[in-house]
Length: 120
Image (cartoon, rainbow, N blue to C red; front, side):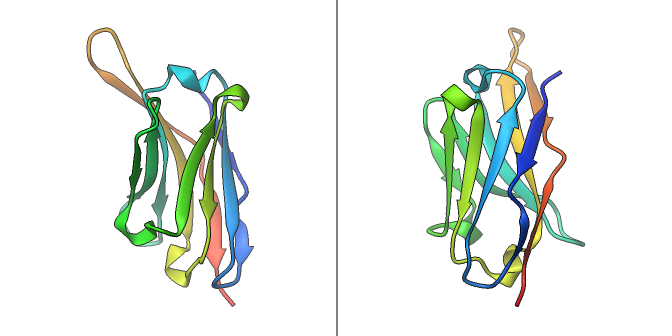
């Protein structure tokens, strides 16, 4: 069973920065894509950013130009650098990974989530 463990969340003032990490229990080269989603209280989970094994990036509209996703294959870890944080970025951030099986189906994996709170 794949395990994804997030770290790096916390409390930060508006305009500040945080860097989230997500360590996988196995080689991230085996994943089709990895990424980050977030969920604020009373709202649906939304895309933050994803990166495929080929390096294709996709960012959510609300974080474009402020957040950067990256991955370190040697460390089996992906990162989310968050700059210029706003109170509306407050949410639980979830690490995500998926892989395709031989039958064409896709397995999704999720971390347990890490809280990010942006407040003065």
